[in-house]
View (tube, one colour):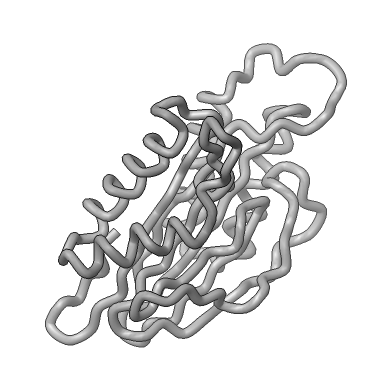
Length: 206
């Protein structure tokens, strides 16, 4: 199986006072460290999220990480994930945008009171799965136009048609997001593009 991190920090929530001694960088590093420890212990996804949730709740009362924690079975193409304050992932298949079914949203890590539910979908060969923060689709042009999902899919489809691997697809997409905002990033913009392949290619491109 393959496991990858996708964290967005900081996520502000109204709370009294400041977060003295716990800047976003410390929170991010600690959250990722807790995630990796839980992963090495081979916890299932809800338990991984619970470990990070416990750590985040102890570190801060005003900054909370959002996350999408996913696990892909390389042989079958089964994708499972838990959501903690992120937009739902999308799938680009043969140039079309697919939503893998509505996944129950959960609060950011540090604010959860129970383990999150697992979402899952079956990938087809050549599918590209896009996990992203809302800073991608909600990026605004100087005229106030959102970047949007349609533009996101168009960029990924063009990159796929050009034979670009997943890493170059991400670079192409980020250039487009920046250009849309006149090279002024207004919000954090995180993205992971994962392509599932079969046959002799045993590893996905991320």
